[in-house]
Amino acid sequence: MPVKLFVAKETRLHEKRVALVPSVAAKLIKLGIEPCLETAGGSAARIPDAAYREAGVTLADASNDASIYFRVQPPSVADIQQMPSGSVLCCFVYAHREPEIVRALRDRNITCFAMELVPRITRAQAMDALSSQAALAGYYGGLLAATNLNRILPMMTTAVGSLRPARVLVMGAGVAGLQALATAKRLGAMVEGYDVRPEVKEQVESVGGKFVDTGVSASGTGGYARELTAEEQEKVAQVLTRHIQSADAVITTAAIPGRPSPKILSEAQIMGMKPGAVIIDLAAEGGGNTPLTQPGETVEVGPATIVAPLNIPSHLAEHASELYSRNLLNLVGLMVNEGSLHIDWDDEILAGAVLTHAGEIKNEAARTAAEAE
Image (cartoon, rainbow, N blue to C red; front, side, top):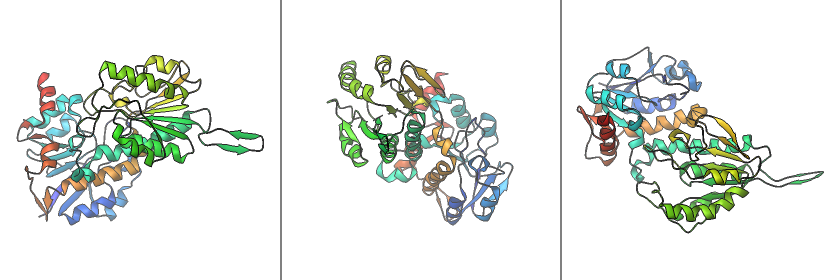
């Protein structure tokens, strides 16, 4: 008997993604999963119900008898109460922001796999939704730099003379940063990349960027950089200020899931930037990478403009949904085989991604945050 999957239409403000696309539905069916989508669930991503029907997806207004639930954003407490006890939920949660949701999942005995908790190991790359969505965010960041500047990015030769290419500095060489670098380079800009992890120099150079070496290393664990000490920050700032203040656009990408975004640009550095310069802050979800960032807003500060969009992948909902749906497919493939649901808790990916199970909050940080209230 197939395992029933239900995918709800996203209800949070400005969320256009959907957790299932038609091309992935056929692959789920081969695993022995019977997919069901809430009517018009893909409409915000411009995916019509007809496309799902053709792929073998059933449409319904709701479902309270599924074994597995896919979502992008976490469900409301009311939605959780409608889910069967013991069912499996896969979605982004960010437990530090959602203690009430975490407690509701625990009390309802829902086994929740939080996509932001998927271990960043080689074997889990196909399930790493943070990376798939960050790649699109980085691409979009490059476009935002181009469209918010009062000049063009590439060099252009005209009958009346030549225009010099713009200088773009990308701060942070993770997935988002490398995509931002590559995009700005393709658009013709002169690009530089900076990261506190010097080992990413080759990656910056591989996408056409020049690496800014400050002489300080902050390599951390789990694929993230550690926080710098005050002395290290001062040394880095001295080197970076020259590059920041000579750039036409600075794209910042420093974000750590579950924690506030680090402030990697100071007010003094911003006030010394070129007139008309632009800062694209891709870490606005965590408060932003500058002390002057206003998440979700575009503001003029001194000589510069700070653009700080929220939920960037949702602006590219079609492809963001496609990549996210593939991440979920690969994750659920660890649990379902020939129509049978079985969770192997010896699997380091499942053990690392689980948020709640059997009436307990399994993630220590999430448990601390939920019980603090």
